[in-house]
Length: 259
Image (cartoon, rainbow, N blue to C red; front, side, top):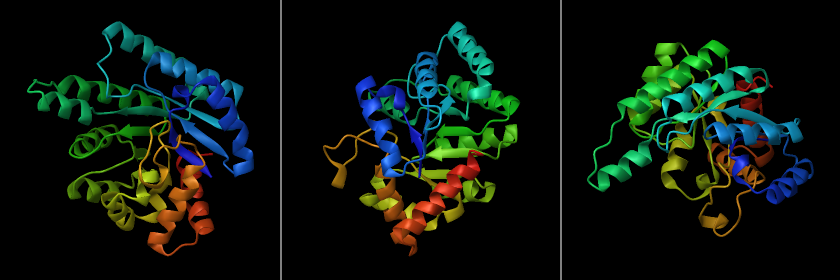
């Protein structure tokens, strides 16, 4: 299988070595390793150089953090362009739903427009480089992301750990955008409902590690092997065996990322 979304650069060197050496025995073929900012991109690149078969790097700027200064953004864009040949996708990019919600809860104003401009810039970069995009765009932000994807003519869009309104779901299905499910598909009714209705050919499995999970995973470190349980849970909803589900999700991921 393929873990479609993981933050490898957030694991310690010891955790990484142990985890990556285990993958062949667990029949985990590869991982899409996303990045948060320039420093994160550089660490992801170094990990991918050490494990070139297993680690497929994606470079971007995660939206749930303060905006980069102009010089920082130019440095990031230049770095990504110079390393585009080794890159699987532009990601993780998107819009700051949770940061905005927390600011509004504190009674603070929050400017979305600069984040929208940043996403527009990064989608333009992906278009120029002919790379798929990995998106953090949930709830109503998904609609804005869809507008920008359509503006740039991008069809290879992967909304990771997606949740959103009916209008966004319908639009994403019509456009053929992919989504991925995390281990919370085992215990979150909202996610299970989405899994039932999203077309099987547009679905992948991810861990978003090292993000921790609840339910049967409470207290356990997040490991790529958890995608097997994601696949089994997704398959059970659709009447597929665990092995059938794993094969389908793996094929979808390999096709989307052009492996």
